[in-house]
Amino acid sequence: MGWGAAALMLLLPATMFHLLLVARSGPARLLGLPPYLPGPEALWSPWALLLWLTWLGLQAAFYLLPARKMAEGQELKDKTRLRYPINGFQALVLTALLVGLGVSAGLPLGMLTEMLLPLAFVATLTAFIFSLLLYLKALIAPASALAPGGNSGNPIYDFFLGRELNPRICSFDCKYFCELRPGLIGWVLINLALLVQEAELRGSPSLAMWLVNGFQLLYVGDALWYEEAVLTTMDITHDGFGFMLAFGDLAWVPFTYSLQAQFLLYHPQPLELSMASVICLINAVGYCIFRGANSQKNTFRKNPSDPRVAGLETISTATGRQLLVSGWWGMVRHPNYLGDLIMALAWSLPCGVSHLLPYFYLLYFTALLVHREARDEQQCLQKYGLAWREYCRRVPYRIVPYIY
Ligand SMILES: NC(=O)C1=CN([C@@H]2O[C@H](COP(=O)(O)OP(=O)(O)OC[C@H]3O[C@@H](n4cnc5c(N)ncnc54)[C@H](OP(=O)(O)O)[C@@H]3O)[C@@H](O)[C@H]2O)C=CC1
Ligand SMILES: CC(C)CCC[C@@H](C)[C@H]1CC=C2C3=C(CC[C@@]21C)[C@@]1(C)CC[C@H](O)C[C@@H]1CC3
Image (cartoon, rainbow, N blue to C red; front, side, top):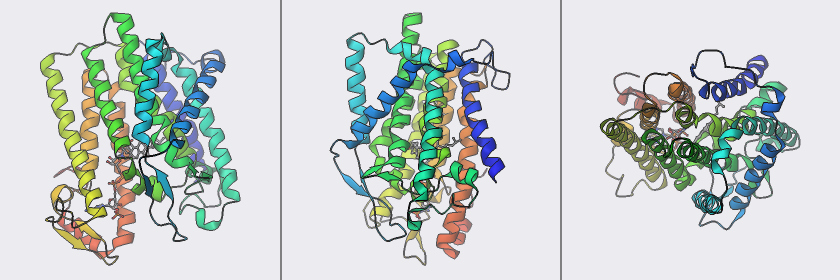
């Protein structure tokens, strides 16, 4: 258990650095060796540390600004509910304004692309230090504040999974903040810097770069616009906050999810307008399924008699909650994952088919969602018992109709 966690703590950062190095190498081979091993001078930069801490501080300040709404989380073990500010989209807009002002005043945004390696290094370092502090904080937390997993007694495993469910400093919720702000907004900022750098190098950004930037901005904008929905995800309601999420949120998301744009900067790809239109269509189909499914479930969970969902067929469960068996949730048991995967494909296609590297996200994400789906099934079976079995009988496919 502990060995597996230790191996992942080495393997995940190593994979991220491998991707960063390979993306800028000539052959850009996903499965090849990295072109060189970076020395300390390539990884460590006090400027990167300063920039990273400023970024975290800025996003924390945006988090603390008055919110348009305060949302309540799920009921906790001690029957209380935490309150969360809904101002993530506001943070995105404020960041965009600030960056826009900076660029018009001469800020060399494209230079950020030269700092990706040291920035990824300080983000990884922060994730380690932060997880250690969270582990120590959990030692003095009451038992009711601990997560169901992550408290096995094996320190390495617990450090990796995270012991406390909702670690907070006063009203500042560390996990909720990290899940949506610095990483997701950082991802689109890195994409933008890559676009600016491409314009500087080649006169204008390529069509492929525009598509990748546009699609991923839509995804991040959507996540922040529907921020409240994250409060019902297993990351917030079930998982502790440890190295896996801290590293995932702060380092993995910004530095590996921007891989397609990184690849395009160093390996420009021609893209016909007709092919670009097909890719836009694929992204639109994926987005409609993803958003349609997520909104249908959220609307239903908030108010089952809402006219938009009142006509859908349902199964009653012993808990008093119902499960949808028609509409998006009657097609497969995770229609939102299907939409997300179709979008992942559309993000890679602008990079052409000559390299496997830009398809890394699609491969990793398929594995992540298959694993996540299995965990969710387990939890739903525990929660809903026979009613869940009936749902599985009525809707036999998990993610892809007639395939899986
Ligand atoms: N880009 C990325 O890296 C990632 C993206 N995602 C995306 O985040 C979003 C959230 O995903 P995730 O948190 O995994 O899970 P879901 O949003 O799919 O939520 C699963 C929960 O939905 C409820 N549910 C399941 N089936 C039904 C039904 N038939 N009717 C009503 N409710 C049902 C159950 O909870 P209950 O009954 O308690 O309401 C279940 O636990 C997804 O769109 C996913 O694609 C997720 C992970 C990573
Ligand atoms: C480092 C590991 C391999 C795994 C880390 C996993 C994390 C990167 C993801 C766990 C759940 C996530 C969610 C999102 C981003 C990725 C992480 C943090 C979203 C915020 C993406 C946008 C969606 O609209 C909502 C997602 C919720 C879960």
